[in-house]
Length: 233
Image (cartoon, rainbow, N blue to C red; front, side, top):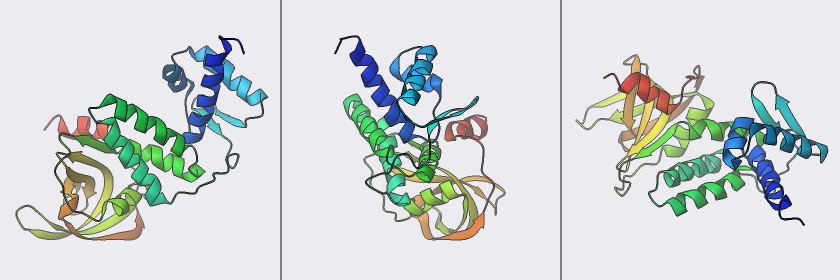
């Protein structure tokens, strides 16, 4: 094999994995990921299509693999898939670059075998989790998986919440995102009692019920939330 062919073969293999790991992926993302031009990505996509890979093109949005093409040898539960995303976000914010890069690469390969419906949820959750500060403080909670599922399924939660001032309230909330500062996991949610967004320490939630009722999705990422609601306070 000629030397100049090796990088392209490696790139084509990586593109297949990346197409399988996300619900939708853009040519711009692939071009930046592989440090090539968008025109080169267009040629790569055509090459993959000619080789029999069923790539679906959504005009103005991006590319995806036809549903059902890849039959995963392992089926993850929704909680397992959500846990992977949490681990990935923790690794991304780790100061050891070798760890964060390798964990992200490994999880991208694992995400490639998620069921079609789970990929969209994985992408959604990845944009709704933030970790900052030092992560060495240990806090006890058993609600994280249910909250993650409620975020991706747009389920209303009813919580019994004990504040740091020992005030206990019952609230109906619309969960939006999770973030962590210095080891404390916090839930950002629209509180129907206060008619506004509030932050809840997850380890302060004493009881949690996932309701059958759903709510309309909030069309923003956690970064956009901070810019809109926090910066001007």
